[in-house]
Length: 154
Image 1 (tube, rainbow, N blue to C red):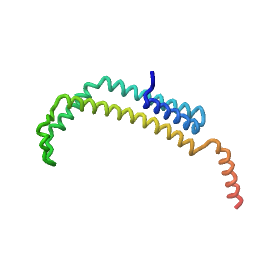
Image 2: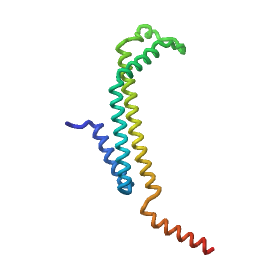
Image 3: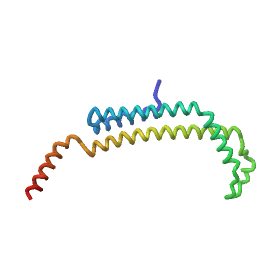
Image 4: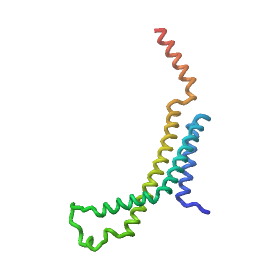
């Protein structure tokens, strides 16, 4: 089965991200932390998917009610156009479609937040490694000892 262009781009982005991470992660502990972050993210996504499937009808009913309340509300900010009198604000199909869209959009937003949190956690780990690189630790210790000697000599 051929992948869509979106899937191909996501895969290319994931490969590029992993290459960038590989440059900044120091050792087994860092990679273990990355795997933990990815595992937590996958579990959160799975839990959201299961909740979405289990609560879909309740979410849909809430969204349907919200759409109906919005359409039933009177708006006094401007006069209604002439064509508005001909439109049915309570068309069942339109309300149903709008409710489905709201439920799916809310689900996608939650999934995106989980992805953002995963990227943020990995980025923080990489930033920590950039701030405290291990290959400079011997030089840092040498510099600190030399600066302490200079201070003692004064």
